[in-house]
Amino acid sequence: MGGGAARATLALALLLIAAGPAPTQRELRNAEHARAADLAAQRAAAAAAKAAADRQQALADQRVATAAKLRDAEDALAAASTKVADLVRQRADAEKRLAARAAELAPVLPVIERLSLYPAETLLAVPMPPEQAVRGVLVLSGLTHTLERDAAALRAEQANVTRLQAEVNAALPGLAQAQAEQAQLAQSLDAQIAEAARDRQTAEDAATEAERRAATDAARADSIRAAIARIEAERRAAETAARAKQAAESQRQEALAQPPPGIAGAHGQLTAPVAGSIVRAFGDRTDAGPASGVSYQAPSNARVIAPCRGQVEFSGPFRSFGLLMILNCGGGYHFVLSGLARLDAQVGQTVRAGEPVGVMPGWDPQNPAANRPTLYMELRKDGVPVNPAPFLRARS
Image (cartoon, rainbow, N blue to C red):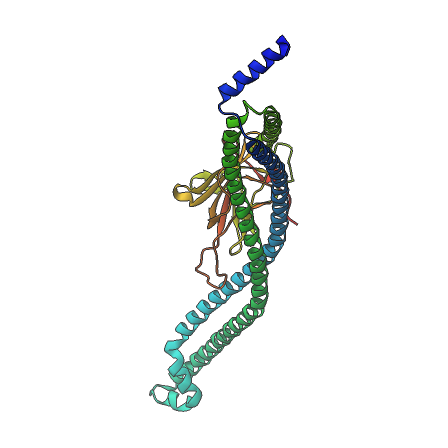
């Protein structure tokens, strides 16, 4: 054996001694099989991660589409609710007028009844000179005409109440249909939101399992890499692939975490956050001064959507605002939404424009005393309230 070969043999021996007892052939085969399985698992994990990302995108698209259909149903519900509420209010006002007229006529109803049954006897019941009797007849004639007018007005009010009640009854089936359509679409949307939440939880569980498996693989590789050159090469290849995957995932997460470029150029392109009508516009006079936001009267249980793509920076109760959400749209723009009954987006979550983020309270349009749900929205630029109207798409 030449000097070079001897030195190589000695170096290998020293390496094996330093690494510990030499592995057996069975250990080598087991290590090779384990490494091959790990590489296959890593490739499968990468494919599964891509499939999960694609699925999340598809689910987000589905939620946005369903929310758009639900908005149409809620617009119809808002119109039906407003019609019923207006009719109920008109009926209540007519009933008040009817009760007032009836109260005015109540004291003279016995006299009217007696006059109608016994006109002559009523006049003769009180002895009086002939000229006074004539004046009494004239006064009685005028009073009769006045009472007749009042009675006619009373009958008209009664007819008006009956007509309004008939119109309320005729409008109720449309309201019920709109409520049913809203409930059906809302149920579908709730199922999609729950499915997305389950997917996120599954992805988090899978990531935890992948970290545990990677730690186990690293421990196994560390125990034999000094002795097995081929497995060492496979380990380096696996690490390279893992780093590439991790870098790609990090870039994807950074892209999601980065705030969007802002809405400065989105004039007339953003959708209003809820169905219904504006009851207070930006700058309207209030007890506290000009309004710094916009207030929407919404239909019962209406869905609230994200006006822009952005990241949720706050989601929860806040002082007297109730449930409140702050959405960072990028470029220094933030949307503030309050008055919700339920929040469906968490802090740190990135949502798309048009994606549902919460639900408004319920409301009974047949109850005149019930408060209609109101969503308050502010748009802030670098912390200062600005008018959101130029950014919102005109309602059809």
